[in-house]
Image 1 (cartoon, rainbow, N blue to C red):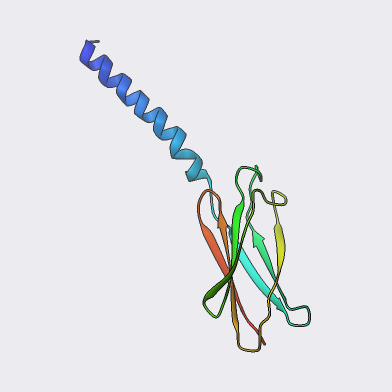
Image 2 (image 1 turned 60 degrees about the horizontal axis):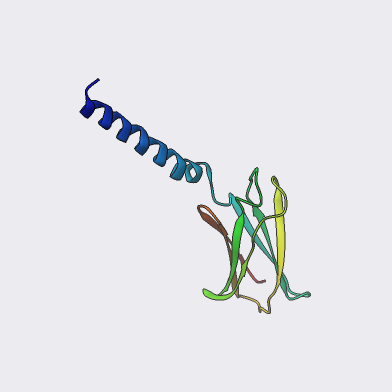
Length: 122
């Protein structure tokens, strides 16, 4: 193998190694698969239920839940891990709303992706 071929092969292997370290973890990550918002008028709260499966809830998790009322962001809550690895989990937030208000919850993964759920107050 010539010196130039050896250098080209080494460069290719190095690039492949760097690519696998930086890209593959994000390719395995995914955003929440479902977000549901339920408003409780008596309690004046919105409960956000999120489905986001992960095998490592301290490394791959829902990092933020943002609540919108009638299109305006009214709260953002940041998290450093998520409860559990499979199945849905829920967070409840105080929210004063009236009939006809549209409430949207957006859950964002710390690695990649987000999902939204919407409810209209009845």
